[in-house]
Amino acid sequence: MVCEHLRPLEHALAAAGMAVGFRGQAWSEQCREWVYYSVVLDMKSIRPHLPDCVEPHENLDPRSGQERGFYCRQCHDGVMGLLKGGRRFRMPPRKT
View 1 (cartoon, one colour):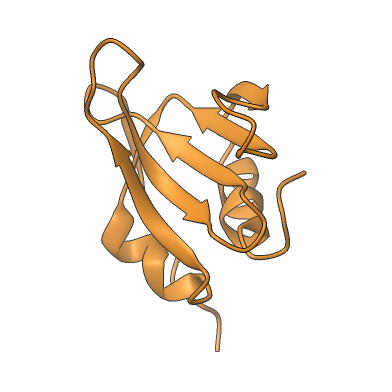
View 2 (view 1 turned 90 degrees about the vertical axis):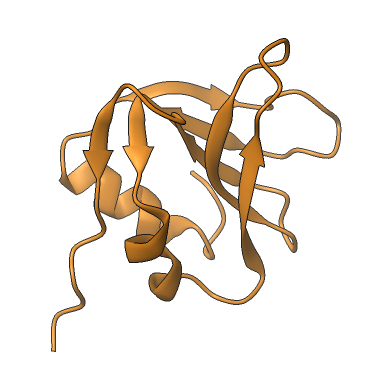
């Protein structure tokens, strides 16, 4: 499981029935646990649900694998999705 800072996103993806494509140490020793989903993450709807230590991440290099998602600077975890071509995931509004 990813860190507490990314957990709200991971739980929302699981609740929406989104399958994990890969979970583990992605591409460098600086990464702890990264989780990849075959969905396009709606970054604007997700961002308000995450703390300040989590930042948007985007890799546009076709040689190393394109991805867009969120990275925790504090824990070095990530939750990534596709740049395009997949089902779109929008974070549900907060319950009041």
